[in-house]
Length: 588
Ligand code: VG1
Ligand code: CO
Image (cartoon, rainbow, N blue to C red):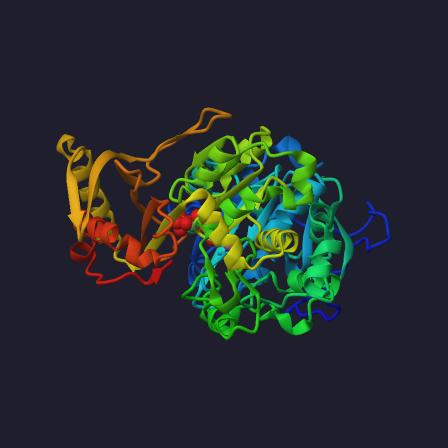
């Protein structure tokens, strides 16, 4: 990427360039203090602050306020010697936001920023770089799987020094600051060139020289993967005499350059095995969400039977969807379980051992079955990757996943789409089986958790909140426990009903209200929760999980198997009546 793609870039002559030393006699960059009014809605959700681009653009100082709030949450004693990593998924407004981060960071005495070239860096790569260079944290510009472009979404997320999303204690602090902010500090004339790899140094007021370092977006991350996997075996699988063919769809998100460099250039997969690999500001007008609905192109290509393995990623490269030949779908809850059961195929875990497994609460119990069989500790956390970080830092967790196409390990503190793909390829290389055969053997051995998720997107917020409140009232009535519900030839008896609450086993912090659970006596679960990543209206998620180990039934269609539980869930919640929605927008 040697071409500078920055538009409207006005060069400001930095006092030092790549080789020059910081020069204290160089031109000073002025700090301006700008008066501002606080907003009340800058509460970070499941993963950062996500709003429509127009909210960031049209509301005066909206982005500045939030960036200042993040930096104000960094202890002043850490700032001068500290480094922040900055990168994003290439979406519309990212470059504007990065310039603001540079200007506000400089004015608040942050010592150094490390930024991906042209601002590009996937979420897992940011996590990797934070850890590698021992940064105090990072700021990721992404709204992940949400659509982009001028009428799409934008997002800003803060990660801490372990490389993971800031825990609730810190996001609460940022939110508090944002609600009372009166001014922000900024160096308005400081502009950096995001294209040129190397260091740029500036003199800012009485602070030590401020350094901005533009780095290759892929290199550190690629280097990490080379240490985790057996690249020779993967190369043999992808380009040896008996190679398989793969189709990887980057969905115009940030993962394109990573796939090209690692899977095509290094592992030898032909160039046409990777598609939609140029990050675009609006993801080609698509929804960069790797599921059966939004990655429909990949699904139909895979159905053609030309490829043995397929995968898609989300906008910021932390999610993955795995498909086998003819479009055989691997449910993400099963995906992490398969990786767990075959974990020794990955050299990294041979070195580190397996410390424990974890899944988010709505994720199916498939991983629990593996943990039980292999006598490993299993943790159940609330939705969102931030809860895994503490367990990993405490040496209690090696592999984890979420039903929402998130899979990862303690190599970093974010979920990692390309890592999950290489994990699956490592399993295929070692077992010499197809995706479908690996999955089917897994079900034979461990039984199968049938799982589905229904998403009702952009529902009227009041209607959604009322539905949840009413449901909670029904569930918390004493008479609810022990009640039976029937649909078709199935009958289920309620054993437990609660709003999931999590006590972090490491720091004892408690997270309440993490999702309504109805658990039946056979272990089947119905879960309702409201999404924390949407930007308009409310998204209701309904999750159904039910275990089956009758060999006659494990290959059935999940939608058929789970139809009675879906029917019961809709009856108890009155979701359709209360929201006016006859069906979900997405079914997984
Ligand atoms: C969703 C998923 C959750 C995931 C989160 C961030 O959250 O359900 O499992 O961790 O997105 O993923 P919610 O609150 O909308 O259900 V990413 O790739 O968007 O940062
Ligand atoms: Co994402």
